Length: 291
Length: 336
Image (cartoon, rainbow over all chains, first blue to last red; front, side, top):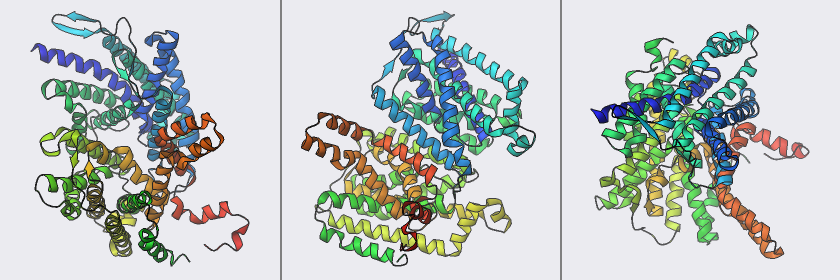
């Protein structure tokens, strides 16, 4: 029972961060209609920004959020503006050109990181990295708990932003129907640029929050890209609520899988869920919640 | 000129190993021919049918492992894998396509990506069958590279011919109609699910055979090599895109360019920096050489970005555009 509860807690805490990764992905997917296969790589860049801040300037990871998020926001906007948007005008046979482009971007980001930082494992050791507190017999990692609450705060903020603000409404309008939004006076090209920026900033936040308890190397992007798309498929394409549910479900599944099946199956579990969702719940949680 | 160039190319390829005796260049040509097979397979499913696959390595690796396991577990010749590797890849493609062809566009691409990863993990974890990360080592049949060269050439010719015949038949028109507009194709009475399955199975068979060839030729495989996302699946996409999506001879041109580019980066621009450094004695160039060698994946990535931006239909598809922009003055007299 204790092991069960401990696994549950670990899964939910991790799931909060996964939700943050998923929201960025699902927003980009909603507006652009494409899967961003460089998502994990953007997170990797965010993590390296945090690492540099901590290692060379002694900035605490939580304060580094204010550096990594704007930095990735800018990077995301540049990528969208100069690499992805021009593809809309290019005549080509394959409609998946933009997805292929994100793969290329991901490769370039990974290799640039390897160029600068080499393939060595890096980590950020803070005073709270390995400390934990207990509720009953269940231990909570301090860093992971803080990360979870910040992630929840970001998620709530994103909800408010998407539902209440003008920009958020424009984003949702573009996601629903690009042409109709354009006719209503929404500059949809600008919206795609901003959305990609926001998505990148959110995934950078997740990376920064993960940094105190995780390690970092250039190839870390790939596994997280896969996690991100499992989350989005699980939650339903383009659904924000779904992304949170998807994130928590994946976190739980991974935690239980690691405890009861074996650590080696960590990555397989996400992919199995992916296939199962396609088989039994195509459309993901979105179909159940309708949001 | 254009009409006879395939025959001319084939003639050059047949006499190539008689003229060029260097093992290194023969090795590169074998790789090139293998990539023609894989690229043709990818082109059938992605280029003609429009279902972009990120998971060619799953079929490639299955073919390679089938050949390897025939040798290590059954004690038969690994050459049996040339047939059964393709069949095994089809055995994977069939249930996969059955389930995942309900997905469209980018979501299907994601499913293939997942397939690739599942197979890589499975081959790593299932140690009793595949020996995990240790990999499979078999004895090569021939010492000389020439037999491999002709087998690879035969396979490449078969695959290009297969693509040409299939695309000239009724099936080919069905495939293209699915790519252009799936709903319209469906409404005209084309069983899209069925034809997508056929297309995927052709692709899987060709790729599986290429995998078996790789096993026989290299003599060693492990999950990281044959199920690699970057080195196999992405490379297959690049071969298809650089050469020309939806063209019969695109993969041939693409494979030639990509194997060349791969080698170009791997050897540090064919040792240009090293050469200049040894002549002029500038130490700095040796450092550059080292970095270029390390950065071959970076070069690949940049190439992906540039090709998609500038040549979205590949060298063969955008041939006229390419020629027009390279030699604007000679345009009138240029024989294309």
